[in-house]
Length: 465
Image 1 (tube, one colour):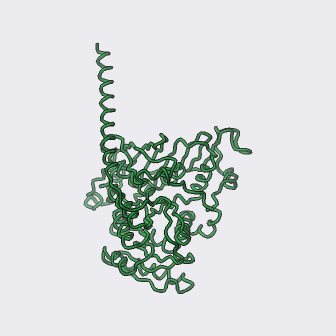
Image 2: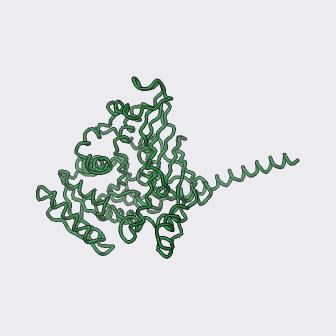
Image 3: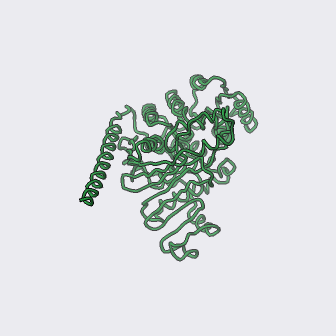
């Protein structure tokens, strides 16, 4: 009888868990489907009218925004028309930099704004730029992008696109209603290896894609030294107040494009998430700051390491991890598994069924190290080969410059941008969804379909020459 009772309890417990999960998914699906049409037109594959001269304004010109400004200003057919930042010294320093590098009168009439938190709004109203580049703290991304589009400009936003699903919907709706691009600038998609893997996936080198692994493992506790100004001054608070994976897109963006997610072939469906205890930030603060320091007054509740498992509409899987606290080497994983082999990163490795001619005998050995040169020679993405020389000093191994070059090129030629607004929204949605799953002890969460079903008719990203 005791055995039967145990079996009964086991079966009923599993049934209860399954019922609870089904109920949560049903409720989530109801919320997803409740989003009304925007009243605008779908932006997948959208091409804006050509801009022979791209007039750009920049909001936030610290380290990240300053890099974007510098490379943009050096491209032909561009004009910097305004710079806005909280700090006067940031504005004047970047203004001087642009003036020094300008070889003609293109950047001779730059309006400058600083001091008040809302000066960027005045800038938009007075200057009326064609495009706005936004590199501010995460909470400002959504309102700045939305207002930029309402004021008639295309918006290009640092990652993440927004921190809440509500804001992501508003960004999507505004983009559709205004017919303005809103691209999250996921620079990692333009890395040499990421571009090569995209090319290999498109050529079918590893067969049908089954699974991917993505991460942002980057120990950033040192940013806490930026107490009053800089990234650490605002990002540190997210480790206390935020939930789930706070920075999913660097790892997820590339593998999502390998798999053609939200583009005709497949789309995100659901995720489950768990996190470790939150220990590292608290210990770091106790060790490095006085007891009464503001960092020791924060309740660091978000787990040090977050792990999510995403299921796609086709049933493929993606593991996504995030950890900016633990002491370990940097990695984005960047692994994609197919029926004929696997591509992986950190370190870069390739394994193919039957081996790689002249290097490995079978898939039990990786091609890595110096042997990878043969892989690059055969599969390097044509976009990388075209732009590497002029972009390699732009930052992050050249990926920043390739990204900026492509943004300007698409605007000047009237081409669809490489990352549409829906991709930025889906990749960024992992933050809120993972937080909800963790709070519900790993309960599955459905992704909103920001495309409203139109992903099925959206062409995959081409291998651009």
